Length: 149
Image 1 (spheres, rainbow, N blue to C red):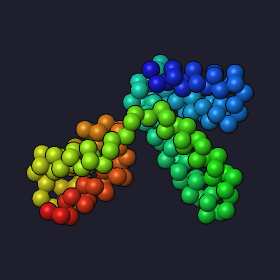
Image 2: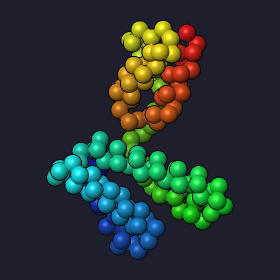
Image 3: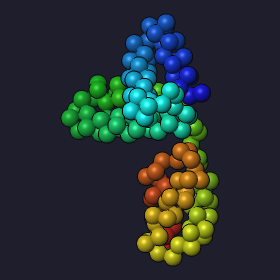
């Protein structure tokens, strides 16, 4: 299970005295625990943990952008390290060709004829890729496909 892997990696980082890694994993563990407490669950399934990780990555990417605007490259570098660390726990992302094929199939399946059908198509694609593609990338590809109709 993914949650167990995060906990195991945290313990290894603590034993290795890897401060940056252990701090990042400690924070990730706290966020997973917070979701469990809020949802009144004993444990999160892998999809729940992936959702927490993606949310944390998104927050860090926003922080990186702000730090770079403020010329705080030291803080931006720390956030980039944490993003890369967390990405290691996500499933392998789809390549662009696979995603284009899924988008094309979803457009046909939804019977999409215009940009008004974008919501239906994006929902179908996101259900099929199951977290293996970035939502913004999916949205951009669907928009491009529908504008070409």
